Length: 208
Image 1: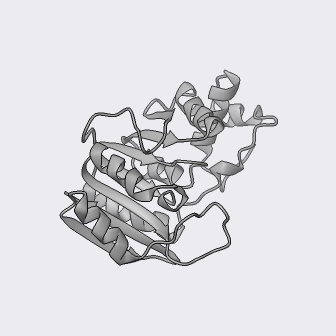
Image 2 (image 1 turned 135 degrees about the vertical axis):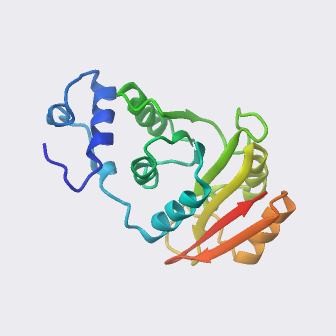
């Protein structure tokens, strides 16, 4: 099966982990059957993804916590661009966490995933040097409480992206402005807060 416009290596790891089979990426993908591989379509040219990846090159983390990983729109280009990076993924949907865990079983051992609420994560204080939280905060019932917990587990740098305009997504509970985000993050101990506008989104880099 040719998936030239997909992240084939990660799709193959997913299929291996789900079906418990082995072989080359091409051989494994031929056996994907009913498994849906649309989530592995390339997303590395999305402006907000490019912006965050560029920022991460400057930070050069060895470990990273990605909150609200979801379908992996950001995860796949992250893993491709940083081939040595260890990533811990958090999501609140069981089936998405199960899919992410399949990657590890399929050979992508630098990815771990767990289901837990953003407001109560089972990590030590300042455990992760870098935390990413992309297209997540607008979904949280209590965004300041969530950010407070995120700041607890973040040691150096936090990257957040949120929509900059109202839209028709019924799952979006909040719309933030730059001043509000900067005030919250400074109150949580981030001394440097940089905000950029990127095609209908605000991307924030907050650093201790």
